[in-house]
Image (cartoon, rainbow, N blue to C red; front, side):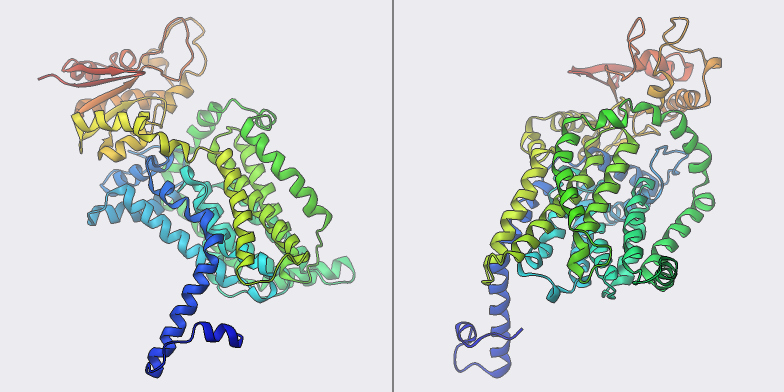
Length: 552
């Protein structure tokens, strides 16, 4: 970029320096000034870095990490480790698990390091795929920091599958904007591979690329008869490497399931259909009335209306399609959340991030059209305001930074301290329907759960209604295969290798049916469990938890 004479004089190096040294001095001073001008725009994202680094780690992320660590240590996925998640997330978590196994880093630190590397790569790729010269100054400044905002402002959901998908979706959407305008972005091979992996993390995510690729196809349709136009668009799309790379990743992944993860298809999927899906008692229509979802819809609905009013299916420039693509991603994320019908915070995260990105793009393009300013620092100051509003909405509708501020007095910190005192670095049997605060307390204490599932969700599914004859527990011969699996494996694993402690949740997550469901009473009916249990004593009781350790 050429600099005018006055600006060149301001960064001129001291006289007398050798030529090469003078060139490097000019470059470093120009880089410093460039970063200094961009600092206001980066500030909303940078303020979240200490929040992301602070405890607690998200409980689902922590649980998946521990399963991958146990898998790496020799246990078998979907045989010794039963979970509803498809295998890809466990495969990816083998990376931080392996780093923790061969370096002084613990699993949590290794995971955070990997997530920052992943986010940095997506940020670099988002910069690479754009045609920055075609963007307005404020739009350019906002898109420069958008990947950082998406990476960091989710905070407590850092590392969730929804978060990983949303981070990878940013370079994919930016590249799709250029593809829809008839351009060939740089780095599209990396974009295709990354998108293929990110959208394969959950089948619910496939709506995002489906809607975006449909838009790209329609945008490529030339003027003229519809049939001939679609035929031309299909021919052009057939030469697009991004589509083939995404499809190739999905085909390889699906082919790996019966070959490498047959137990997932034969064992876990029937449990998902029979038990896990029934645990959600919120209908899609009820979800729309939930406070968090309602807040998202209040933001998203007017943005979709604005986008629809100014959308063209034949973009003449990259910026013409950017807002529609983020709008489509928001709609696909909303559909995914409604289909899952559980209303959990991380299910709503992609809707928030895509809606805020859409609002930021619309605001930046509107400011550019009004020619708010063209002075060098000013676009970044305007972007700081847009990014600040982005962050404030996510804060007001999320759990961070409040969980991080409250951590020293929270359940996770208390449970971590109690477990470290009796079983640091050991194995513990946890009988609880919840994942939080069990995870990440186990991760922080360096403790591995002996349970083959992350919690007692299979028993929750087996006893989601009362037995017709009023009995509290089924007899062994009445149990279905999933319930008998839990009854047998928990008892046999407990007897085969007694853990250093047993943590019992007094709230079983199972309806009251004449009396409370008690995990110890349930498993003591197994003779192996009863025999070993007689050697344990109550060590501590607080809140809803009881802690048992072997007798002296």
